[in-house]
Image (cartoon, rainbow, N blue to C red; front, side, top):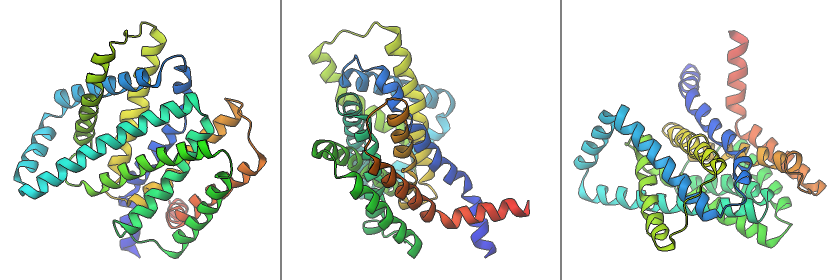
Length: 308
């Protein structure tokens, strides 16, 4: 029992990191909507450029030793392992790039609710992939919580087929990105994120040169995009990748439900989107599923506070 408590306490910061990412992303529709007058391509392109510039500047100035350590570790790996890491990193960048584009387009051209629903499907896909592909263990309570969550998702999926397909695409892209980050181990997560973002720039620079779109001049665009790059990109992505060092992708997957719950609340209260009453029940079921999935950790936290 003592070993379990020590393990839970030692992993507390990783659970906090797992919670932080979805919490921040839950509010992302707000800055995205502020850029509604610009195309999804412009938002995506400059978000990536700003994020990769900030991250590499930070790494080069403050984290040269970490970059060197990862480079030496990569060189020491067997050739087949280096090839595997290279392909996984490339695929990760593609998934991340596609997830960002589809999400931005969905928020500004489909609906905020569709974007929220995407990150309801995402945890189910992530948890199922962790269970089936990575052979991560789920106890009885966690399996029950997944059934409850699936019930809530089925209730939400009875709306527009177009919105459901957009949501499924966005959710699946990020779910498989998370699973790959769980597989890629042994490297500094901030360095890995910097490399993935650098690969993303290779996708956009040729397109920007071909299109020759004018650089946005509005200060609002740059202020909001910079905020998205730092607060809604680097911090939550690093937080999620850091969490995967010690917790399963299944646990991180269920934590992602925090994102759509906040996004749904914003859609109703801030964006004034019309919502069918049954959706409130569906989101309520999903919230209950989160509590059940993490019941052991919640019990430990309350027990710890009681003895402090």
